[in-house]
Image 1 (cartoon, one colour):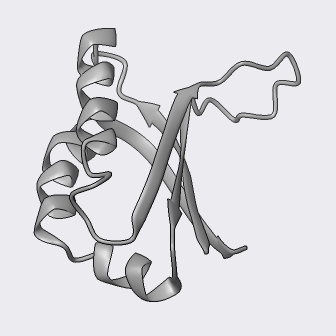
Image 2 (cartoon, one colour; image 1 turned 180 degrees about the vertical axis):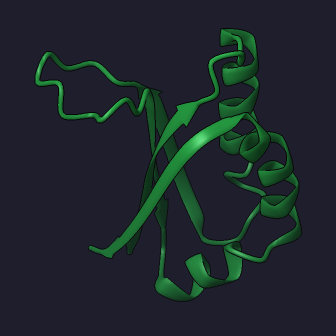
Length: 98
């Protein structure tokens, strides 16, 4: 398995409704892109303060590195990026094998 996770800092003018739309679009990829097994997300919720102004995170689970690699250029993923990326000020994405 591969975990694909990221953190977002949304632009200040992006509303909570737009943030919900972004994550709904991302969640909607599950079951439509082969090998994408699950997607979870949420706002930062810690008093630790180590988020460096990132406000939300997500975690995706792929069944294999090959599925993750096929997801990256997949047309559904590209369409979701067209929704999400314009709303972001900063993003970090990191993958690791489980």
